[in-house]
Length: 275
Image 1 (cartoon, helix red, strand yellow):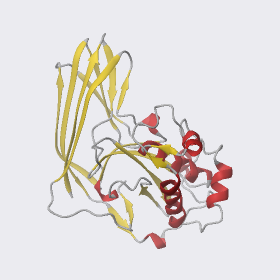
Image 2 (cartoon, rainbow, N blue to C red; image 1 turned 180 degrees about the vertical axis):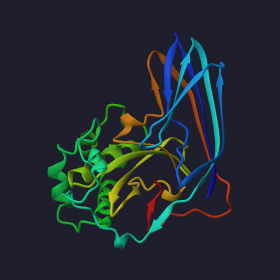
Image 3 (cartoon, rainbow, N blue to C red; image 1 turned 90 degrees about the vertical axis):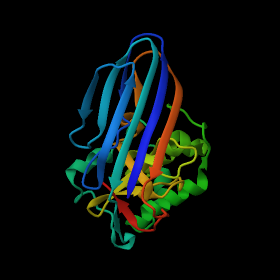
């Protein structure tokens, strides 16, 4: 499937300010960038970095005082891998790849240690396979109200579990925390999302099951096959689309996600992997 994705970002910068952005899709065997274009106004030098393990693509810009504008466009082709979810087991800790243990520990927004009792009472009795993570997503969808603007950059999984309201990143953080509390490695994913209204940067999560990372989205807002991955990390702290080291005010954020193929995209019950 081919997509055109992009974003227009504008800021009022009161003094010279460093920005670090993570808005460009990553690349691997499941996701290919056919072409891309990045325009910055005013024209300034950029510094690029790709994280070696996860492939997150960052760039740094030192913006002078005044108007600062970014326009990014890309044509991306994705090849999601679909599998039968009934044949995917959890992996016990004694057989987990050591590289996945990093995603078992509590993190800034995913305090799995504090949510262990709730996770065990709700999901501890369930069959330890793909269906248990599906049950976690169902619980979040049924018990947490999705409301735009209901949380902020300080909201954690514990806050969401108590307040029972949030946005996509809060749904993802809670799913990650529940999984980790059950010894299932889980991590945060940011993406361009086809069909999301209004268009915005989207967040979901993936869990390590069988021998693969599988995508889950407890918001049910978009088909998982329509997710064009941007970044991957322990939680939102690792993959913020913009990190600002100074004083700047965002004045515009418009996103574009168009399906270039003629097919109709619908949610599938298959297990989806694209990492």
